[in-house]
Length: 361
Ligand code: PEP
Ligand code: MG
Image (cartoon, rainbow, N blue to C red):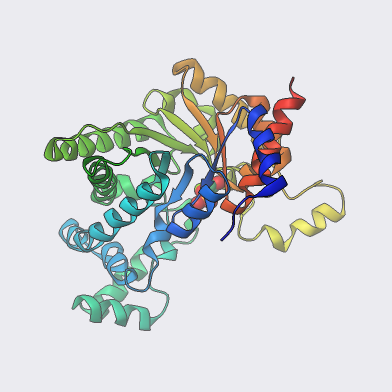
């Protein structure tokens, strides 16, 4: 088991005394959450719920939900997904013992969930009793030319609100279950992905509050939750004031924000970025180290415009850059509240946050 002991633990203790930035981890499995805590994470900054859907025992229900051609079909499939979603959150909240947990609602580029082969379709047909030919037709209809800019993120929640309702319900039910058991009440932070517009955020916020309030009334429990958004599109950064009117926190998704600011596919950059680095056009891979002039400018603008509308809007970063020391120094300068990175980078982030704080003194 990973654990910080001896001189390393002492060094980390010193770092913690001087750093201002909180350090959280990106985690969705119990193992990652436990590792994160052993390394000193102060919460989960990003739980990517779509990662909870790929398990062999779950994927058929997920595909059934995505391929359903009407709301009734989706609701039937969601009813199969809801119990394991709730159980997942109970487990995470239990491990995190009252620390904040940012749960991001479903954000798959749709193609990740579509059946890839006829065998996949056959498996869904067998698991659900639905007609394979019909499922195949629907999969073809849903196919996208450019899935990363397509029907993903909160766009799924807008087209199919019942998906996000199921997730919000699972989060709040799980939190109530923990609170009722007498353990430290969790602090869920419900986060919407790929938001671009204030009206989108307003719609999602209302959906979230409506659903959460219904669960709290049913359960007769009071728990605190907050609602926020990822900032991963240039428009979201530029119009952050519109989003802050309906969001209590922003988390900068710098993987997508880098992709959308440069117009460079995060999945294909490796095919040509080497030449750019060799020729000195790029100093570093912008997907690893924050492009402080471009993407960083957008972060600075979003922080300013968000705070102008909601002075206490909580700000964090949860892209890969959240574990990169130079990027963490930038986060300190902009005055973000926390960085979130993969569990194994938490110690590096704690040190980098301390160095950044000292450098600013
Ligand atoms: C991001 O875009 O930076 C992010 C954290 O979300 P994901 O990597 O899941 O797209
Ligand atoms: Mg993203």
